Length: 481
Image (cartoon, rainbow, N blue to C red; front, side, top):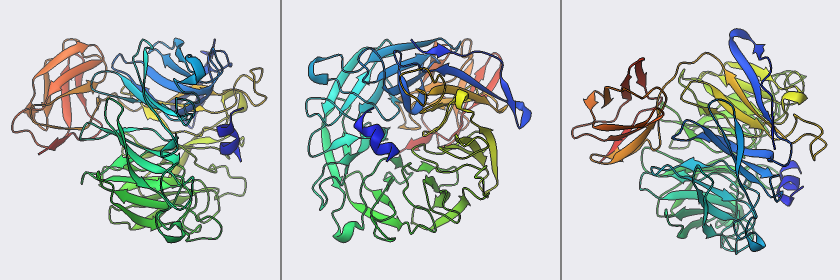
């Protein structure tokens, strides 16, 4: 067991058996992969869809060297390990990836490891779908231990956080950093730079970029607005590193936001806290860009916590139906965690309660793939005969009947820039338009289109006319000036 797992806790076997119907006949849950150790253990972070239509993710342990893996699951359910970490001397390629990867315009994936590298404090890497890995950066004392995912910003650079390092008043306060595509890192902010750490510390999640170009995030502790080490904060930071604390949690409104924020379609940000709230089981909240916070839901409203308890590292997802989807790490009918949906007004539906054989403790968030189905992982559970007494985790799918759509590699760009569109059934596509303006495009494959932002285009949804019908993007594409 790694040090990270202790901190977090204070060959895979395919399971393609009969689906379990849940809540309604249109909802189907399937355990697709049960991790067994040799091909990965303890999957971490949210999976990502590649341009080939397959899904890619990381496992914190397991693999050839038992130091973590990158894996792929094809659209037909075939699982394979494409990279095992610590393949280089002294683990210079890093080990223990704890965050999901992101896709860039060149069809490569970018991610981080929590440990290893030449500085022994984690790495940033680029990897192809074939498993060719390049270490871009080895973190050191000044920016140590990346935990949350990277974000590919509108300026073409990557931004992220570390939970250690920096120049603040606490040695392990953490940082916000910028990284170029070639791996050059600049520390933008060191936490605990303000008296009593009112700016927070331990940012365990990634960042979200607002329409104003600034980044928004959370710190899991600090803020000094409740007893002990503080219950955490929400902050805004400019691309040049000027930070403003927007909100300090006080326990009754939530505590310890380990997850990050997402930008909702209404222009506000949404997130979760792992504890606190009206019943102590964590919360879902909405916060405006100016910092006005509203608690939408408090978990563990029932004495048995059947609605779930403790949403942990997973960011919320706003799906194509406008509702929010997420996971809780505990609670539910079996005590192993849940998948839930939540309307913007705060009506929660428990979609699935995990049985231990299906997986337990789903720490991370969900991906809605362009086929409309949700995919995610559990940290533990599944095959109890693996090298961990609580199981090595699972990969699952949940179909709630939502329709296929198209998504972007990047959801913003300038006129004349070429971007990527993800989806399915693209062969024979006759047109692509941005907010009604036709765009030049190239069908690269049945699951990937390259399209150029056309002159005169304005921010809006992208539509793709395929032989089987019209597909619309799940979010608006923002045209930059």
